[in-house]
Length: 306
Image (cartoon, rainbow, N blue to C red; front, side, top):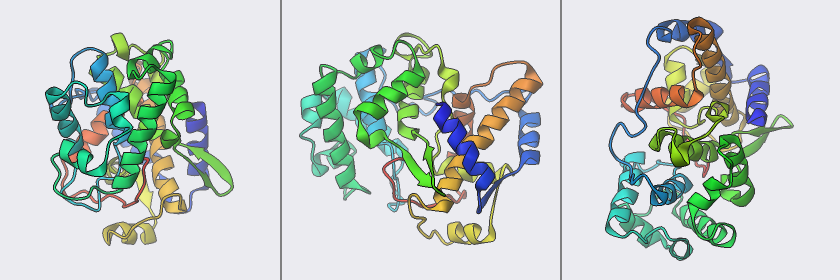
């Protein structure tokens, strides 16, 4: 997690297209200091939860597939979460490791009750195969065995996932420096913590080590709040819905500056209130804010990482 923090901070000080506005951070922190945002993990009621190992299996599958909900404007995260939930409720073996290894595009579409090809469908299927194979090879086919091996450390869980599952290795090179995000690996730890309310499989002694999850929505919300400022050229690209290539300077800066800005926001709110604030909590609030703003324009990048 220190690699995520230090490398994204480096980007923020060398950024050409995105600027972190510290006065904007100050305003947001001042607004939040008396009413710290508390958003329930499953505030929409769209996730599977049985308080046991099957929930862990569900969450790993969910976060294996939790990326790229465009260019199909009708597809959303809700379709993914609720579709997988319905699948598991009708067939408790649907996400067994051996079945994940054999999953096809049409089968995945059926799970999500989706009538046409999914964005990056071949990649989604490939990643399901990868997860099923490695779960079977190293964790007796069970995601909860993976979680149990992390010794109640969210940071160790993220490292284990990145080690065992190449599809979760979310890092890139920016101006000659390696930059780390690990968005989907981190969100798996956060989902466990949120679903199990910090108990059982979600009991992590270092949940504070998790950063926000650098995606489409959070940068757009931070810009709207005055925390991030974009160059005129970047504003134009986003307004036109022009694709921004994965790994480009603009794309890396959008994600990295979001992580850095929220880390600074978290520190400032903690200073003002004397209470620990978690990046996970701030991310939940920012994401909930974003999905309730249908007019919010986000950047467009085809990526398996978010």
